[in-house]
Amino acid sequence: FDGKTVQEQLEKYEGNYEYEGNKGISTLTREEIDFTGKVSVANRQNVTTKDFYTNTLGWNEEIWDFSTIASHKTPKLKNNDLNESIEIEIPVHQIHTEEEFKTLIEQYPDENFTLENDIDLSSLESTGTIISGEFIGEIDGKNHSLRGNNIPIFHTVRYAKLTNFNLEGSNINKNETDVGALAKMADKVELQNIVAKDITVINKNNNTGGLIGTMTSSDLENVHIIGGNVTGTYRVGLLVGYVGTSYIKASSSNGIIAATGTACGGLIGEAINNTTIQNCYSLGDAKGNQDIGGLVGILRESSILNCFSTVKVLGNAGVAGLLGKAESNSVVKNNIALGNQMKQYKFDGRTANEQFEGFEGNYEYEENTGISTLTREGIDFTGKISVATRENVSNEEFYTNTLGWNIDIWDFANIGEGCIPKLKNLDPNEKTQINKIDTYDIHSADELISLMNVHPDAVFNIQDDIDFSGKTYTIGSTVIPVFYGEIRGNNHTITNLTNA
Image 1 (tube, rainbow, N blue to C red):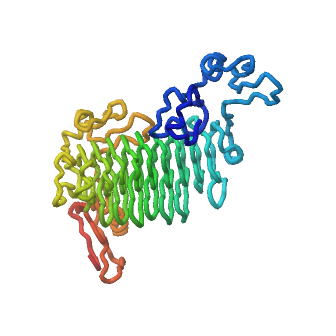
Image 2: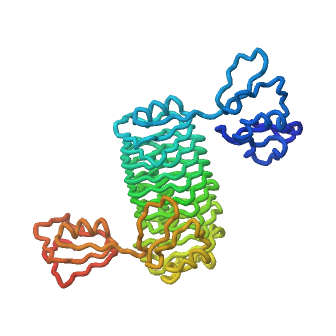
Image 3: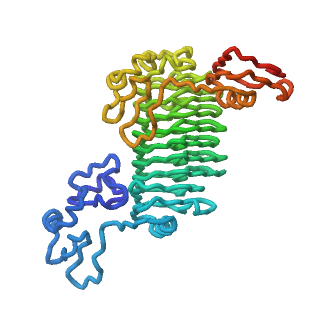
């Protein structure tokens, strides 16, 4: 309704309305201004009823023609007004094919769409994105799937709403800032009820996410990625690479993530500027250089609430099972780290002593492998991070009473079997053991080398005698550079090692 009229100039504003069905930002969200009695919100019933115009707004029916408003059209003037009444409702376009997906959305980027079929996007080629420019409309996927895109679908989604669809089989390979299978950038967007499966995003640059590269001022709820494989340089996340001033809730990630630089997280690479991550979790593996977290790599002036991670992390500094590091008075409350680590901390990597003020009621699981965060010297973790036992993590009351998690959001049906909680929404993850350590059978030298290099923390059962004859290595090298797991020889013999 109003752009930037200051408070003292609103004195003579009275009885105005903006329509809730219109796109855009409500004037009522402007901060530090009291719009009571000055600007209110009208609904669909209001704008289709003559009484609203004549009684609430006080318009004169001898001047105004309301004959079309019941059809959700605008009033007209009862004079020489040559204008036709126009639809107040935003048009909805049905999409049946990949050609319609591209042409209709690019032709009407501010209108609404429904997917009427699964759409194969693999044939849509471009040097940039499938949909260029900004999309500011709405898409209701009606539970259909978008499949096989080889480039990001959108360049920028802004003031948009994307709901109720699956994204499957994306395979993106780029070298540019801001890359995700769904969109490069998202701003002031609502994302709801989305499941992404088997998503590969490889980017030789910053701000890389499985779904979105950079997201600001947005709401993301009931969004999941499973079977993700995401690689980037700086700010890399399975769900989103770089997030600011956003609310992410009741969502999950499962996959493998790698960063050549810093700020790598199983869910989010870096979250800043009053971002809230609540009732979320992450599964899989993450590795990078510095500030690598099972859930979030770097948290700045933001919050993590009621979350967990089982992600196994690797890196050189600031590396831990839930959070790489927190800065700028962030809040980390009622979370638990449930992942096996190797030489890394279980919960927090390198948050500075003075930044723990906002930590409260968090836990790490005592039976996970890894280094307890509580062993970090010079920091009092009392009331901030504690140790949970097997009895705790198998008991619903620990989650609901101690951690304060909501039973309407979380499913605790399998925790008595030593499994993780799940979300009561579209969560696609199967029943998963908390303390599961991968076990592999070894029958040959080649299997030993390949499997132990990829899984240096697993359990290996030697099933046959292993002969390294004919296997040569660079002088001074070792077969397995670093090993943290367990070898069960079963009385077999390993022979003819040149280097060990």
